Image 1 (spheres, rainbow, N blue to C red):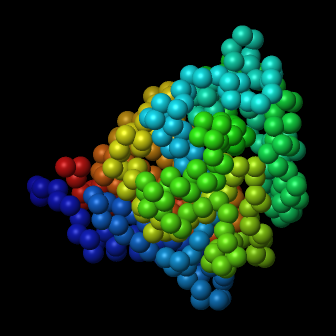
Image 2: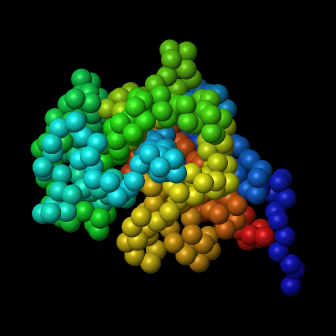
Length: 363
């Protein structure tokens, strides 16, 4: 029987091209960008057209909205604060708040920072509360406009006001309940810890530690011209960008494919900060745990333990995978956001991983 050998670079590119070209033939999907980092080498591909019939393929200059992948950056910043002994995840959230929030506890159990990092706080997904009702009908064509209108004048003071109305209905630390609002609150805490605005804190960290120069929350007018257009659900009219949320930590980051390659390499190198961010905070079952806002798939038969996050806004969806067993990482994005988009991307990446790991090895 032939011994396993590492796949050749040309083979990897063919595998990616083949899977991506199949993906853009799926209903509603007409473009994708993919970066794969495998054993230190990066493979970048752009496919299709951002606007059907315009022949405008995305490229390395294209800026994408990466949605909730923003949360992994917030988690990494929290890990940095822990490594620098500026933050203890066992701290009570109340310690950092400007007013008293007696509602942020269940019985005698107060909310702790680790509950925000692990989506076990019991804080609802979104503040204001109305956003949760709107998002229940995500595929409705008027949903993006409703969300934009809701957040048009909704700032940090409004968030902190609405936080008083939150009711914690279960013991924190056990039940997984996804909370973008919890990540926004984490950003507020990081501002207090570092005495620096979150956006500045984030931009400085990723520029200095990861050399990501094209990743940010707010774009200049020139940068905004490079922002990918996108489509929501089965609507063939271009959708407006994601509205600015308070702090922007839960879903407002934008990035390019070369910058996401740098982020993957940073996570795979697993230095002190990355390693801290990958630590398990809560284990929910034998297959699923959570770290510093990283979803952790544990002991997968093929890929081992790996770190994953999905990002979605009304006009794009993406995935990031960090797979230490094979020194492998991937980021995929498409400028379409509907009910089947995530599944299409998962299938595409699984096809790529299957073929690479069949011929590859893990050292």
